[in-house]
Image (cartoon, rainbow, N blue to C red; front, side, top):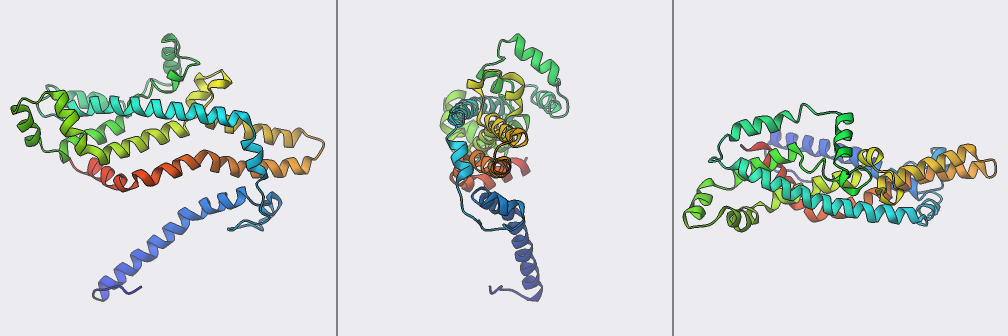
Amino acid sequence: MFIKGNTEERLFNAAIYVIASVIIVIVMYPLVFVLSASVSDPAQVLNGEMWLLPKGFTFAAYTNILHNDRIWIGYRNTIVYAVVGTAINIGMTILAAYPLSRPDLPGRKSLMLLITLTLFFGGGLIPTYLLVKELGMVNTMWSLIVPGAISTYNLIVMRTYFQSSIPWELQEAALIDGCSNWRLLRSIILPLSKPILAVMVLFYAVGHWNSFFNALIYIRDEQLYPLQLILREILMISQSDAIDGTVGLEDKILLAESIKYAVIIVSSLPVWIMYPFVQRHFVKGVMIGSIKG
């Protein structure tokens, strides 16, 4: 590739390309390896014969996983949790971030100080569990949604975006023209905030999709298990069967190894599909919301 500029610029640009290429390889190799391992002969994977491209092509692990009815229950539950949870997260974050971005809000700095303190201090697992139990949310979907309705970090990022990217003069002009606060938020603020909204949707949705610890603590009914918890149990069961089995022991061990990689792909695929649709807003929203202000 021809790099324009003087010698120093060419050397600098060349170094950037080299570093970027190395980072791309470091990031992409594990992804390609896991994908290849999930469709490869597990014996060749264990023996180290497969290091990049698939060998001994097989879909046995995917067949084993996808023919399990619990997988589809988990997908259904996780989609519900992610959609409902993200909608609540976005709504609550907007309603908190917008007033805190307004310079005419009394006590704004004190409120932000109290909110920021929650980044450093938390109630702990046991008090949180007792609170969720007293509210009657244990073993319901709300135990996975309500306690984390607002992320303090996301709230600060969105507030900073509103404060730095949408001129206060524009808001003042709308208020002088008789625009109410609700209409100002709906008709002016939100249409100008698509980048940060896309980022928040991605952050919250991925958080709900990957979450399993809260479900492990609060959910007892298997019909309410999210996908991550079901995949964890499938993996544990396949490994325990491989250890305890007496017939076809070697085959069970190999299948358990292959399932381990297939589980990663099955759980990550929806996020990979979603990311390209918000990627063009992602960098812009994060940079503006995090650096300015």
